Amino acid sequence: MSEQSDKRTDHALPYRILWTWDAWVCDPFDAESYVDEYKKLIDFMSEWDYNGLIIWGFIDPQHGGEETAKEVARYGKSKGIRIMPGVGAGGYGGFVAHPEHQYNIQTFLRERPDLAAMMRDAPDSKTDWWLCLYQEDTLKWLREGAAWLAENFDIGGVNIETNEMGAIDVCPHAAKATEIEPNRLKYAASFSDLSIAVPIIYEEIKKVRPDAWVSYATYEPAWWHRQEDLHLLANMPEDAIAQWNMEMDVNAESDPPVKENISLIHSGGWSYHLAAFPPAWTFMQYRCFYPLLKEMHQFGVNQRTSKVKGFDLGNAGSHKMPDNEINYIAAIEFSRDPSMSIDDFSERFIRQLYGVRAEPLVKELMLAQEDLQKDVQWVWKSWATLMLKGLSEGLVQATEEQIEKLRAQVELARRAYEVASDDGKRRLDTIIAVLNEYRIIAELSVDPRFAKLTKAISKTNDVEVSEEIRKLAQIAASTGLPNDIYCYMRWA
Image (cartoon, rainbow, N blue to C red; front, side, top):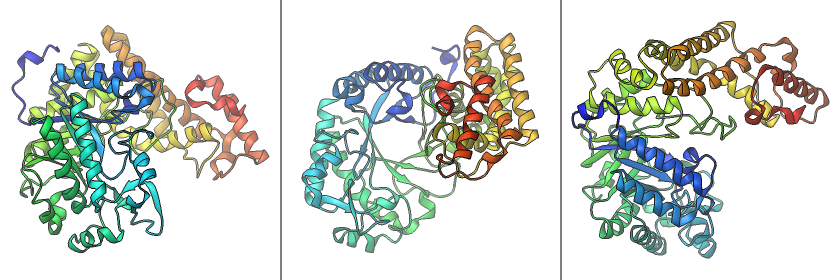
């Protein structure tokens, strides 16, 4: 336990959850890593007073299938962390992420293509990714899958999502739902869909796991923005937990439509593992150093002033990334004590992680990076994508001011390293590596030798463009940019 653990008061929010996909935590994506990395994350969560861990991709043969999932669930329970598998009631694989399992949606729809949804963004086509929730055989399958999950895995709950955004079903079976839900074809989640799927899954989970947390994703916007749809949640089980994608939105005056509510923010932790992945960005995560002390401070305040009973930190990757680690701690501690200042937080928690002498330097580094990251990320992303894929829709060049700020950040991190504790040095090794990559790419972006590359590039078979990329690869090699991550030397 941390030094502060025995001095903490009970947390006012009963639900304190990290929301993960398996690939964000595994390093590499195999059975040994799945168990090892999730156990380490569970240990961290237990130490820092979290109590729920959502895992999308909970069961996947690529990382050991049912046996490793059972091991992670048992370990979470032993440490007081509820393991809550993600359940795609309308998409996202269903109960098992990988095909070739009877409780995977793609497998099910190969047998029953008549149960596929007609997507609102492509109503003339059907895929094997999305289910129609308005047919009895679909609901029977959901009931069977929920019972199987509860009976075979020592889970602490589930996190349910239905068809999302453009995949919301508009087939004739769903026509009545569209008629009674004014915003069904406008927002990211259908409350009609949730009102059908959630009670069925809830019932089967609770038969076996009476104390389970059954949460469901309402997406965005929060309830006070779609009052006309709220009647559809009236028949939800009383203790089912509505997960609202509130991000930084807050309304202390509006009463939620259901009893149990939590707030989700996507910017919980953006970082992949340092060595496991190239900087290929997705909607959720990428390679970066993105501490969020100011945002997590305000988020913590919001949770205590709004009428929710807890939070999910989305985008949760490995806590071994220093920015993820500090964001997770900040969310817990600022929501525990919203009156605590960032300076007080730093003196208590950054000092604990990095050492007394390094603390003010690391605080300065993190606060500066929170703003600088937003300014330079597209420089980094556009040039790294060019090196990885040979493609670009337009490269972003850094300004001289941004380059100087990045150089200053590297120097500040090195100064902190000189006076840090041993554990602080370990963390700063990771931080310095990523900051140096930012700096190098920013400097390459304004190198006059690559002026031709700043124009839009749609393909790499053009001789002139290919030659420019080869030149970039050769020069990048001399800068110290790690080729095993950016893969640029394949162009040389």
